[in-house]
Image 1 (cartoon, rainbow, N blue to C red):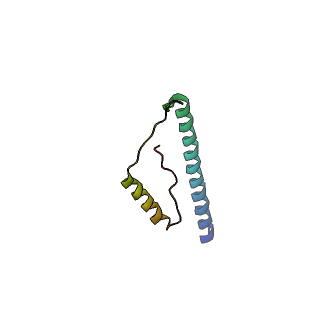
Image 2 (image 1 turned 135 degrees about the horizontal axis):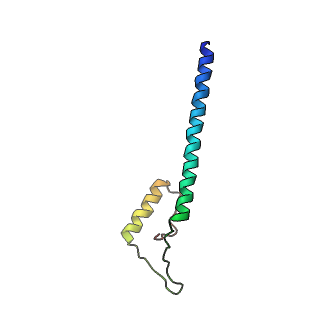
Image 3 (image 1 turned 180 degrees about the vertical axis):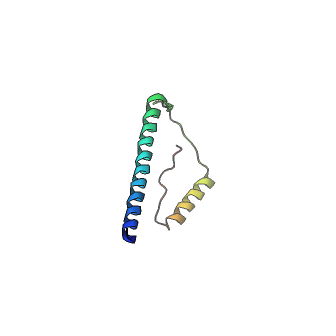
Length: 86
């Protein structure tokens, strides 16, 4: 077999190996996701009641730092409209 034949054979073996490993990663990932979704319950988030409003005050110093960082990162084109605690 000449050099070109050996190179094409190695190319084919390499491509099949990579495809097989990536397919295994995708299949195992999907199986893990299905297992977790089926057998591990989701933690429910507690939200504020409709009648209650929760207000978080942010200090002026923190607000100035956030606005300054946004201005510097966006080179003056960005604005801070609202800050929410997640």
